[in-house]
Image (cartoon, rainbow over all chains, first blue to last red; front, side, top):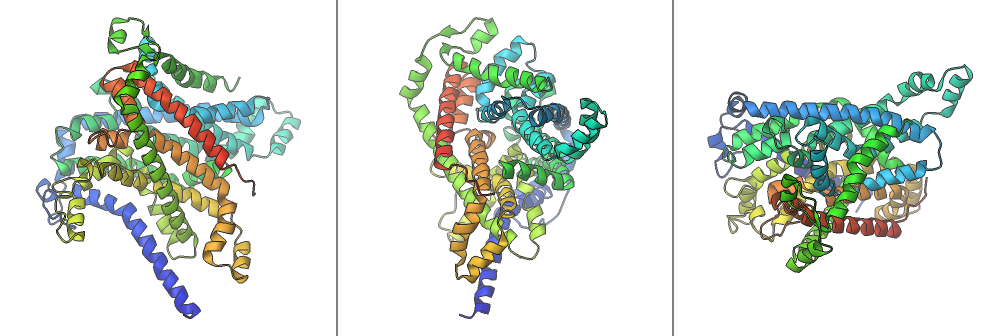
Length: 281
Length: 286
């Protein structure tokens, strides 16, 4: 076999594998979007249709007009995710700075401890949080949910933030010190602006994780008016309404869209942050 | 001082609850204790003994390990394949790299919905595909309804969700591999496989190690997929430690027993991570 045919064969093989994996990753998305534009009658056809015969917005209109509670869950999810993101960012910013810049002997133990605490099963914490939050009067409140979610995200966010601070050269701060700037002034005016990409990465990551939460909300919130998207959708639409697949698929599309926008807008920071965290290890 | 808020939140919402749940695992602690405000009664190892005797605990340890190991290995292999292809000079790599991330941003509960619909026993796409592929011999395939295939069904969804991130991390790691060394090896006659195992993998070992341990921990913790898709059934074939502990604590309202499950789970995690670190020490090629 000549080198040229060998190369062509390799290329064909590469493309074949690539397309198979891509198909696996992307076809389900197509399938959901497709079903959401079918009438409920059509989604029940067997064998299924691969292009809608009569594209319709029925599922979406139905969702927007007949299911007001979906938008309450939606709003709650935005509130909880936004609050915990803000909290995570603030705490991670200061703690990350401290871990990176204030050299104390036990810093290394703090990091090990943070990484270690991530391993523990969430259910284990929930069993006792359920009782503890009740004693503290935080069960069934947005505050209790937000704090619990925030705590779960802090270990990763703080270590990630610290790695971004580590990347800022110390000389910059020393120069500012010599010019007579105070520690806080150097922190806010010299160092902070340089870690904004890192902060964005932490923020987007924690927003995605908070948006995704199911376990915390399903155990710590029982009040329907405070339910978030994941739990609301499961409780309401999976059991009784799972015969309206056009609606369920419309819900899937509407529930995912914000994440897709957030991700594609901030993709650059997000990828940088995640890979920085892992590659540095 | 700057660490104070994080130490406070982490202590109150992680450390205290974990220690508290370990203590509770040795008590008779049910929903009634919470409602009536009765302090949990010490019952030493009763919760543990009951769990072991019923066989549910050992079964769920088996299911958990099957799930974690299969999913992690497959996502490493598929993720590495995809990363290598995207890292070669293939056309449209940038485009593929960005659209492949979509499953990763789909919320877990919605991923479950997506795949429940695909696996749907009467009108689902999967039934149709299996029917076509077997030339009509298997015409009523229902992935999640049989105890022999339900776990496979969940593993497929877990892979669908985590391959994108795995690929992304490995792609970042591939940037560390010096292309001149690879080319030199090829000139010296090393074939693709030798170059991959002798050069690429060693240079990427620290990335592989961190991303694999990240995914192992995530897979150990996986709960919503199982809960939505199978609730641990049929016949307990998808009851992992996460599902079992949730069921004990929040469905049967036996918090003591749930805490016993999570305590065992924690011990397993600690041993597993310890062994993992022993077996694959961090290589220092920078």
